[in-house]
Image (cartoon, rainbow, N blue to C red; front, side):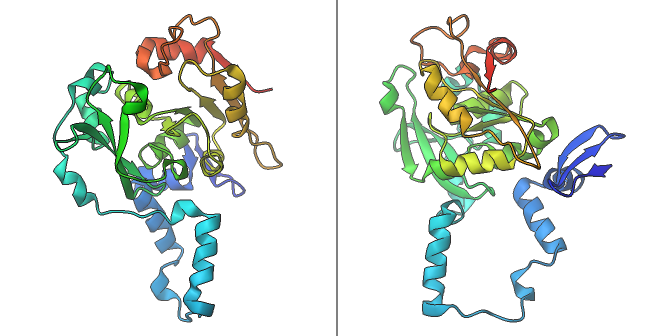
Length: 291
């Protein structure tokens, strides 16, 4: 096995495995991404209880905490106990099923239903896997786009990436990540048997999201946004994900069906909406790579 100390990525040729230190622990210790983070911290002796000297900051550390919240707001999000999901659990949705999200996938991502608002519930998680919000999708396939999603428990989705802690290990193993707009994109890919999807929950890659996508250090990144966007708009988002330095260089591309061979013109369809065969065709023949 070869481990690159500058990137912490490994190649296990005899076992046909690839990834980084975190995905290695996840695979052989049978852990989730959050569990692997804590395991490695424990192995390195980074538990708070082992620090014998407590540093006292002025004003009780208020300004230090404020600066961390400003500089790394993704680690300061409000989180909730997952027991609150019990209220919505076990209520699988036929509309999602017809949209290519099978019941096993709905269970995997804790999709439920809120009787009070009559909305499909989709939990949102921080990058390290803590529950930080719940989005509600109106249970009506014909509703206007602006009416589809409503936060049941609001959170700033630009500070996280949907599917990140679920798919981290597979993304590292496959050395590729495909990024769509919505949570359904990630779930549809999962139902196709693919665990390499993430979603930015909108058609703009935030600075925080770009930082963590690049930090995955995958060889390939493909942006697969919905039909209807101008190519220049998609290209500008893709350019945020390019990484080229002395340590690592990635390849970044974006799906653009210029002549609407697969994505119907004016449909606003996600590349994952058209089924596995069409999605595969888009990835094979309709990805434009940044030079």
